[in-house]
Image 1: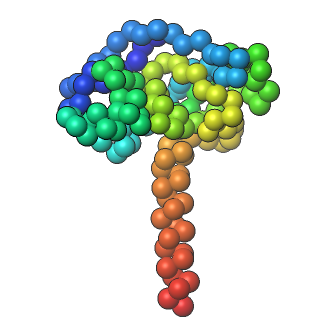
Image 2: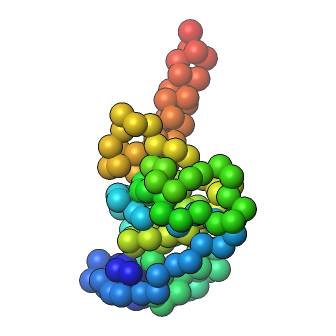
Length: 153
């Protein structure tokens, strides 16, 4: 499958378009064909890390020399594992990969009990891909602003 890998820490030039192994879902996972993903500030920060900071955060985020970045996506489930009950093939979903990354690729395997939900029919794949990080960030800001306004009144 095609993927964009981060070969080392640094500027955008460290990203490489390459062929990599096609993932196979485990019994509790779904295989998703990715239709849309995002480039977030977090992805840029992770890619830009060098030296000791890359090593330290690499322990938490699995930053190797050929890491596939990308933490939010939308797409269509192509295959479900034997134990998957929440989803069916052809379900349109959006998801966050958490610390795993991997959304800068054609396919990804995600656990059925992970941060994966069915995409509303009225949303485009591009809109849905931005919900996990962008939507939660907006929600946190709105809650903070509402809380601040309530305290002032």
